[in-house]
Length: 238
Image (cartoon, rainbow, N blue to C red; front, side):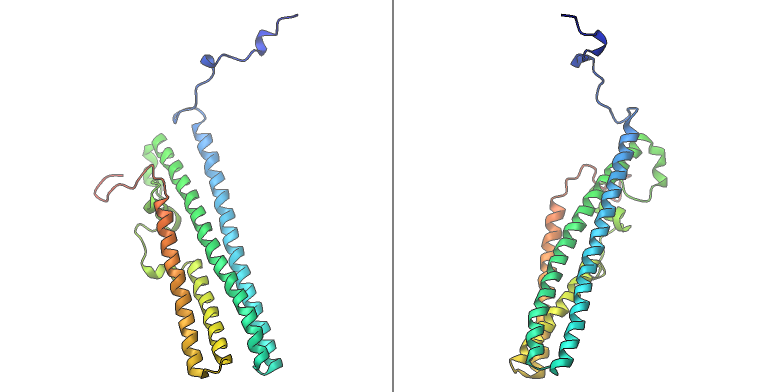
């Protein structure tokens, strides 16, 4: 049999090209490609966040319109209460799953920001003289992620939670819980004052439950962050 063409033989492992190092010829191209990939992933995250929130708001709006029509048809009778007690819990469930998914989406976004911070760290290792021109962080801990995602250099106060989209959805959804409890109380004949009290209690219980769950979720997410380039102390040079 004929010998194979020597030019088609696979090179021995010892003569193959070594893996690219940080200063290799393809390093910048690889880092740039990964950076754009993370940007695309963040775009998908924003799209899903907006779509899930829009679905909840649309469902709530449609439910309010339907309740108004039923109220006119039944003169706020027992039929209206029965319809509301069937419809509003469904809207509340939709709000809860929306909050949970928004928390997951925010965690995904934090992971992509962490990846971009690591790439930015590599950029500055390749060209340290460019550091004054970067406004986002090159550190991949929770503080670095915060600085790159929302342009904050320190942790915001507790009120920031109700400014973000999950907090807004939580407040609106808690109003739905309070309305459900109030309508149920009226149907049970406890009077207007009792219905308002039960409605307020339902609102507070729902909101408090979401706040407790969110704090635990955030603490768990922060503990799961694998840090390679921590933010130096304030008195240290970066």
